[in-house]
Image (tube, rainbow, N blue to C red; front, side, top):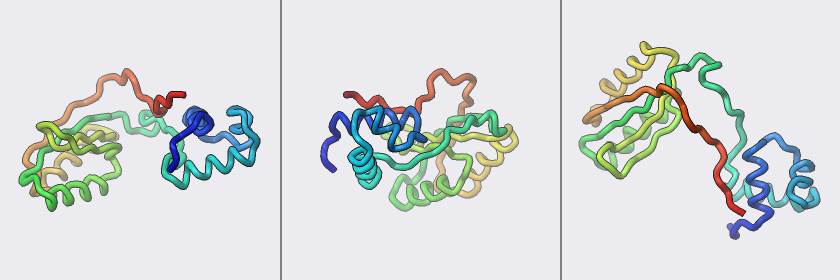
Length: 155
């Protein structure tokens, strides 16, 4: 993909603020006519810069008040073990994010759960269904300070 220009960046900033903007409204906000704005948006989507559109849902409002971070280490730490772990966490709908790390802990996972019983059941699944799991730890979120969905796209 070609480098992003000022119009592409304006499109991205506006869509991050409101992904439901019509092309006409978006075009007006960024200072282009509708056709070139639609073309640019389509190119951003097709190139993977814009990966999709979704609603941001409050996890408390839908009965998932437990927000926890889990760290996991594997043994052995090889391609097969990592593949098994990756497949396992992709299959857990409570896993909101999972990252492979460079430091002491191999993985960093964010879970949401309805209650502590559900959390314990998920952790038990890690322990019983993943023979490559060497250790697992967890911490609970007491209060969220910052939670952004928009990237800082500079002009």
